[in-house]
Length: 154
Image (cartoon, rainbow, N blue to C red; front, side):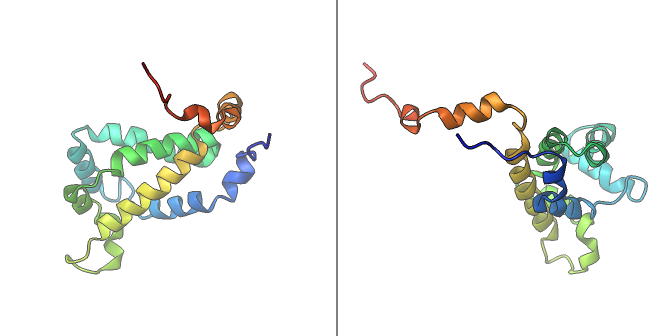
């Protein structure tokens, strides 16, 4: 049975999706740089801004630990904060793309959010069960036909 390649530190170092996600997140303003942005994001989600800050501390933790589990956990919260398809959220998210200076007619907040969503989803799927060898071997060992519904359930 083929094994899953080790997704440890070396794999994370060379993961193009992770590098792209970090590029996207680098567009976010620092809390001290633009507290109004973070307050708007928290208000949109109906939570206190301290909750948003607490969860976003997963970013520096992931950068120092750089483990599959830390990447997966960060991606879960990125999907929570930026994963809704909602024009009100996209309006808040125009801040990270303000450097584009495209004007009001462009939906750069949506572009940014959808890119974060897709990239975070890809990384979450890739790293969520890393290290769980029983799970990894289990689904590979199962014959796909056993997943099909029983023809006669009576």
